[in-house]
Length: 505
Image 1 (cartoon, rainbow, N blue to C red):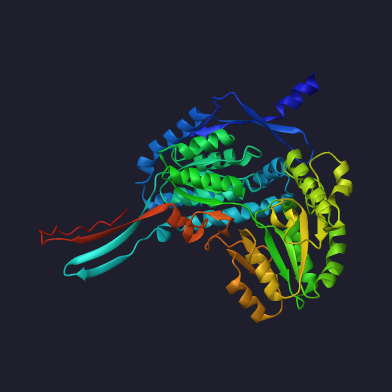
Image 2 (cartoon, rainbow, N blue to C red):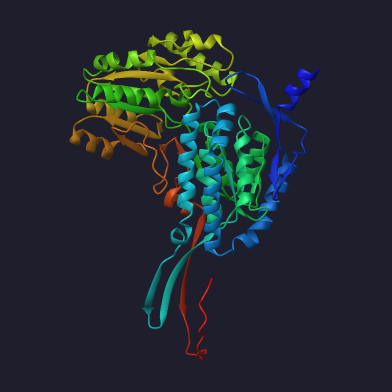
């Protein structure tokens, strides 16, 4: 009995954060969160209903009135303080990600770093939010522009990056003067409450940042709430399209990032050791649960065999195991259901006739507890196969052989997704032509995962994105603000006397 009580005590309860305090959900519905390396229950998360969403949006709307008028330097100081607090608690946050998601600790820490860079970017908001000024556009007439906050903004984030993707959204939204409601994935909700606690400690006024836990009920309530001005979303293409259509129909500004099938082209002149190492990390890192993961290899001419000669031994040497062990290269998948979905694609690939070179279903790790699947590699995948056309979102690489550079470009441009791509070559002409002509939003030249740094912007093309603006960078500032242009002329008047005090904000 005592052992059972201890086990129950170890299970955390994850609730909402509304108006600066923890609030239990009103629905009475809960979801289970499991340690993906052991399969054991580690948390229970409340699943919000319409009343919870109503309360969160109401708190945000009330806070926006004063926060939007807060001097920009004070908003920046909150971001500086948040940066310090994230750095202080970085190890704790990484451990939380590893428990709920399964990422290896060093990978979890890397995702925090990439999110932290957005916070650093947001610290520069006094400069980023500056407008423009033109003097004497007419006789005695000046024109100037300003970027003003929108109102209540919402972020709906995926399970694969519970730290990084929310940090792509709320720091900029808040720094720009908006209030924010975060709806994290119910599969790994722990980080969302950590952000709330750290923002509170940083001095953010109550209601400016709120967290609504939940599933599709909470999502649809947010999309249909008329008080919300903008929605940011990252997830599957089907849901991204639903979010875009529903939110847009309700008059909201929307950026919705969907699925991907990222190709890596290997030219015959490529450094094959470099290409193999790049494929290993980009294809199997984070168990392939990355929207920027490389999942499709395209070998040009006679490059396939030299590449396989380097790649196959490296795959065999991969260390797969619990993410809590930093010696491992790859951890488990997020849930048993998702693992089984990825396994079904391996089954499908065999039926479709692709050549299975490495079968992750037979890896020794699959006999241990947790939601593990070994690295998998298919050769001779063709464009008509579902394993090539669809996003698998797991540790499954497909290889397609083409005769020429032009064939490789055509193959990628014809695909429904256009999130990220890369080419490995020593030839500058090939690299330049690839970058110019490929119909993909983010391109790497001998860089396998070309995720832009914080001062640039993230976003794909085609069915990888719905909406006109990318995430973070200057695109993010533009998304979370609206432009106002003022033209002014002043008549002659009485001038005030001298004031010798230091001017302040």
